[in-house]
Image (tube, rainbow, N blue to C red; front, side):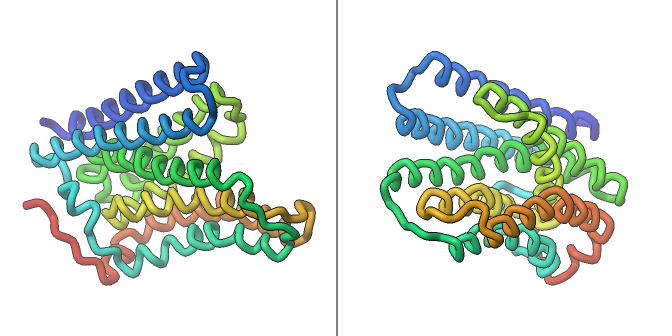
Length: 272
């Protein structure tokens, strides 16, 4: 298989998986297949788990054909370098920031604990599904054949970010505003793609994805707080600055200083 096919075929496979997933999701919602929201969410979780498994099976097949840099097992066990941990500091800060809103909290409630628990499980299923498809599978050929130079690395994270952002544009079917969601997920997708490219660790980006989507929902679901309190406004502004400025800038810096970051304490077992 030539280089072009090795890059494009996994992208096409990823696009097909996402298209089928959204087709089923749309049918479930608009045909009201399930009687209540919690049941719908549970079905959504199962779909995400199943399609994530499908993506990993396809990824394993690429590995067997020698068109993967690592086996699927290695992608879950590769040691994370010091350079990678340095690069994900902005994301870790963004994950922690919502808890500062607790300084303005006036109530704690478990009234919606069942719905909140299902929602958090959905976020972890989302991390599993989207990273398996849009980092693991989609980036398979790009990681192996298109990371040798700064220009290639920038192209790789741009393509992955664009795919991730445009994919979220379909959420307009579920009431989301694509003018907000597409740009934000595009920039976020560039960053997480750069982290994956640097770490070669799929589990890391799955966990970061899940926690990024979960912590603000946990705070909002369990606590009542003064929305216009200075600390809440500061947290919102800080998260926006990180997501729209710091993360994409960090992604570009990862591409530029890739070799130096990758050499900082990283040990990997490459497929021979």
